[in-house]
Structures are given as structure tokens and as C-alpha cells.
Image (cartoon, rainbow, N blue to C red; front, side, top):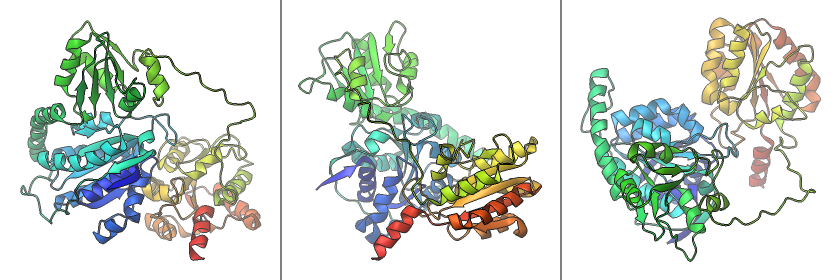
Length: 530
């Protein structure tokens, strides 16, 4: 059966067909659509596949490991910076190993379309010493899920699938495979497998090291890795992931004259590197993200070779690849780009008309007029657009939850008042522990939780904070008299400014919850009720 699917959707359908029992994730572009596809899928519902959003990527990874402990196949999905949050259980899962198959999908965002950095998750896979699969097409993404679960259960190790924005969000026809039933409930045969006491962990680490030779052999034998001979030996091409597609887009009559090594499964297959290096003394490495393969070549081949790629400057060091960049690296003519007409002006992102964050920032800006300097620490979400005109309200955006802890650190340094602005979903993701730090010292900061009752930036997914923020803050120890709830509307502007000004002047910890439903989710809810 053929289906027209995004890369994200192909991964989700592949998991359903491969016997998935549970998927865990926190929304993050470009990975969000994987979970959403499973949540909307009738077959997944009939099979009872668990598919609720997790509070953050760390809890998602740990829950997936728990389902694996019970013998079931599970998938955990996140964007690349989410893997930083999940790093602790991810790294240790390589030592514990798995029982039921585990696939970690990490969606990287080269060119930073909606991210803070251009991180390359392949380095995390190498760091953890787990297999990494990198599809070059949506069909490969689908097929790799089936293969990845089998590989995971064969070696009793988690497997990473690394995708990038362009593959995640482009669509093509997918041919599906035979469906597999879910694994039965089965506990680990080794009752001590998941106990990482030092004495056990040392043994598990030795086993992980022993596995590496077998994993490299699997890469060499993998159908996803292939060597394609060519007539012109002046240079060879090593291409991974979607970069291989760009090479083939530049092929004349579907053929490339130079030898090509396509790499889609890691560890890097040394035997295939040897094969292409025997034929070509110059190697051009084309890969999306960091120079991951390029850096390893110096240790895999002898001196005397010329290696071209991102490090050499033959390919741009940053940003996404595209067919024209690859054509230039191959020495081919590049079509002239059409200049953008002067009348076309870039439009920066902006808060939606009627957004609750707008009224929150207008009140905050007025309440801050008596203070000099930049002292508003913010976070990641729709409200980050408060950094732009006409608001110019916030001064930082580093990582999930950093607003509260940075405000605390600035206050500890003597900057008072210090203000943190954080969204409801980000607060439950990573802000609660920072607030607890502030509670313990009654740090004089004002925390504004701009609560639009959803995870708005990624499309309006369920927020773990909805209906719970007051109880969470009180439970963490925030004083009742300094926990305020305001309704951000123009008619309440003066009252909201007064409350903010009072709490900014308070020499202790205060929390203001600015609470109104996201205008987009409210509109969708209204339409669905008609």
C-alpha cells in the first residue's frame, strides 16, 4: 500500500507497522509531527499504543526505557536540543541496554529555522556508542524503523534515528511493509541489567565496548550503506543522509561519474572507507550538520589524502545543504539565482493578533519604566517574540527553563529587581526546579508565568501545566500572598500594571500567573464545537 507521508509521518507509520507499543515525546520542531500522527491514527488507537505528551524529553526517555524493561517496543522523539535534556538517561541506556526495542528519534535543525543552535545528534550517538541510522529519503526513514527495532533487540541496545528539517517536513509516497504484532509482556532475563551500581556498570560498559566490533560489521553489511563505483577516480564522494539525495539530483542521466560511498548507518563503516580510499586520493564529504564523517577520516585513512568538505571550506561550515551548494562542491555549473524583487520585504515573526502575551508585555513594560537597565530574563516559546519590536521587553533566551535560574543568578549578584518570563509548558518542562531554588532562599525575583494553556509555539499541543499552575507553585513553597493570578486583557491593564509594580518592589520571591487561553487554540475549539 502506498501512502503520501512527511518524513516524520513515515517514521510514525513505520513504528506502528513494526509493533510499537508506546511513543513518548515533548513537542519540538521538526519532530512534533511524529507523535501527532500516532495520536490521530485510528490503527494506533485500536492497538492501544500509548501516545501522550511527556512533561519533557528526560521523562520521555525514561518512560520509554521503562516500557522497554517490560519487553515492549517503544520510541522516544525529540528535536536536537531536546536530546541535551534527555542526555542523562540516553547515555546510561547504552549501558543498561534494552529489553524490548528502543528507537530514539532526534530531529536536527541545520540553519536554525526554529532552534537555538545547529547541533548534530550523530555526535551524541557516537558519544554513547549506540548505532545511528540516518535516512536519505522518507522511504528509508520508514524502512529504518523496522530495521532499527530489529537491530535494537538483536544487540540489546537503543538505536538512534537522526533526521533533519528538510526530510522531516517534505512529503513523498511510501510503500509499507508487512505489519508486526506488538511484543508480549516480558521482563529482562538478567534481573540486574538495569541496576547501574558501579560494580555492575563496569561490567555493562565492558559489554558495550565488546559490542562495537559487531555494530561496525552491521554497518558494513547494511543495505543502507553502499559503495557505487564510478569511472572518474579524480575524487570520490562520501555522502550521508539527505546530502546523498542532493548528489543524485545533480547526477546526469541518473549517474554520477565519480565513485560514491553512501553512509546511512553508523558507526562509520571503516571497510567501506578503505574501499573508496583505495580508488581515490581526494575525497569530498557531503553531510548535513557538523563535519562528523569528515573529522573521523583523518583517523581512518593514511596521510597523503586530500579531504574536502565543511572543514576545508569547499562546503559552507554552517547552514543547510541544498542541490546548488552540492553542485558547486562537485565542480558543476550552478544555476543563477533569481534576485528577490525589492518590493518583497522579509516579514519577521510576530505575536498573533489578540495574543495574551501582548497584554502581558504591555503591562510589564509600563511597570518597568521606573527601573533602568536590562533585567528581564525570558525563555523559549511564543512569548520569546517579546524580544522584537514593538515590545523589546526581554533580554535573554538561552534554553528551556533558564529564565528563572538566570534571574536568580542575577539577583544573587545584586541586580534587583530581576524578572523571569516563562510560559506554562516551559515552566513544567524545566522551570519548576529553578523556582524551588528561588523558594529555598526567598530570592528577590519576580517570576511571570505567561499561561496560554497550551504548548503554543509548536502548534497547540496539550500543556502539562493547564489548570495546575497555582497548586504547583504553592506546593513548591511560594507564599500565598505573593502568588498572583491576572487576566491579560486591555480592560485590566491598569490593574495588571499595579499588581506587577507591587510585586517588583517586594524584596522576596513573587510569582504572577498571567492566564488567558491561546487565541489560536480558542479559535480551533470554537470551530470544532460548531
